[in-house]
Image 1 (cartoon, rainbow, N blue to C red):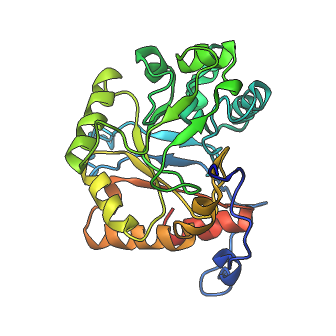
Image 2 (image 1 turned 180 degrees about the vertical axis):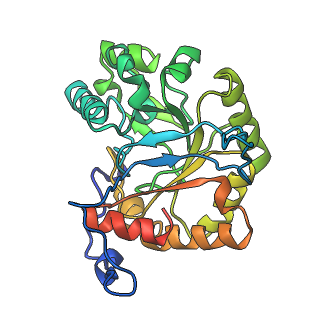
Length: 304
């Protein structure tokens, strides 16, 4: 009578709301851009934006900008931990991120020593198990992400069985070989927005304020209120993981029945932050069943 675990994403025939949206096009009064004749770029910056920009008499920007993440195209690889996926899969993600000028995410299993050379294209996670977290780990990366929730299993932690914890994985996660890697459901030092603000502050202190700090949450019914608190706690970005997001292992009943689609979550969070006048203070990252370029465009239009 054990819990039925499953991997990947939700396989039930729920509606995919991306497919119920269409994209408007520019024509006459708002002419379209000819990419063969006019300069275009897809580069984006993720992070807090200043309340205003001050320019001196020589047209130099005087305002000190918060640390930003630069992406050559608005795509990132979602978090997948070493242990839930293989060494070779992590190597492929890291090399692809470097080649494309984007970012990949270590997930909650730490950063293998072989991949530290890809640090400028890496987001490292600080999850409830704190696997592999030390000062070197934090300072190696381009950004730090506090993992609170995951779209495939909102409200619960993780479990990597001991039989998967090889010598290499144990060294990366800083746990004994063959031991179960248990991630508690909550962070045991976060029971309020004030506690979250303290952890964000501590991580910025540990990296001399040189690394953006984001927070990853699952898309749930009160996600807009949660995001508002995260923005006020000092995070630089929020990654929202939707209902159909993938996983290495999750209880099937949780994966298939808990959470809301990312399409609703992004729109609700963007509207809430705009209504409170704090949308510019934080970037939004959409995750959880982003399947193709059309989904990306629609997510950006909704506020990501």
